[in-house]
Image (tube, rainbow, N blue to C red; front, top):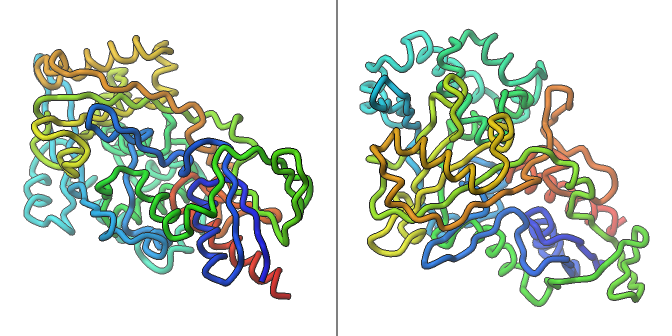
Length: 412
């Protein structure tokens, strides 16, 4: 058995470490910051749990099923489907698009509204059936164009793409024109069709914390000043230290990631929503809107807010804000409040801003020109979502692959 150094205590680094430790190796994790988890972080502000960006965990991710104990996290689920808001003359109109397979009664009723045509609803059912056929590897086969082109070829109306798929998936992919590789879309849509979007009781940081507890906090070195000298040598606080293997669990090109997002968290006396769905802005492209989607995490997971209060979390895709010339927190907050007030009759005037987060390097680019596969694109012992695709699945699957590669290498 070997002594392994893992540089980076994000989700990939921690998962890789727990797997190698379970295989009998001695593992030490070095993290340059003062916290673990990378992007999966949660702050506590005045009794509210504020995740860094709007995060959910997908219970259908195969790697998440292996890595996490959702029951121990006290995870609770959003309702499948979404509510779509549109501006109609002097008032807003809300449509519920329920999942007809998991909520058949609601789904049948939502099909009666005029938001989506019967043909578009049929196409959603066909899409759902198609992406769920066969193994997960199958969704990474076939063509590799962008999501917008894929949806158009599937026959979806422009209205359906602009008012449903765009606000939902621009908020997931953090880009404003659905240029993300269709293979990534097919994978995410399959996972959303098969599982639930859940929130842990302690915020999204519960995920890396669960891995860290499994590993042992004594194995994690925070505020670490380390430099990788070669494949088996780390410089720690200026002193070379030898290991049997070193895993790079960070993206050395993260500063070049251009997909960014603004997340605004508000303290509200009452939830503006009537159900535990995510609210999608159906006008975000059609009427030059700003908000991609709005959620009330405390409706789903009460621990996110103090008793008698609600946490409202709003996602603004960075590219959309840039297009509208909104480049700072104050201007974005003002525009968000104006948009929300149209939907909810001035409700935001009673809301208190808790945080306006700008996550500058939120996701790696995953365009149509990138050959996405079901397995990581790796060179040497390096893991992270940048080696596969920007998701929890990408981070965890890359960690599992590298852990296995290191284990095989040290046993030979």
